[in-house]
Image 1 (cartoon, rainbow, N blue to C red):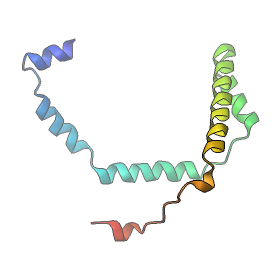
Image 2: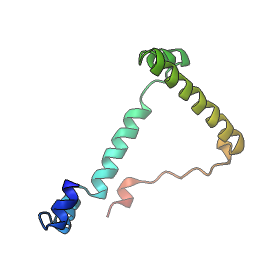
Image 3: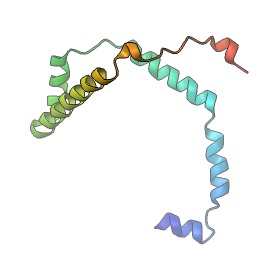
Length: 103
């Protein structure tokens, strides 16, 4: 409510705020950070189910069991999706040379 009151009482100009936020981000910056995250994740070793369950059980007796339940449900849903749309039926995007794409 306080934020709404500030805007309606002309205490904050939403357009100048938008311009300020817009300067903080650009698509190149977002793309570079996304690539860093995906690169980091692709280098991680796969966890075994046993390790994954142990990690979730450390959340507590109730939370851990609930978390493991959600992981199992998620895995079951993934298997259903794999049956409905097998990976080999999905079109693979060709590699793109980033130097050629830069403007």
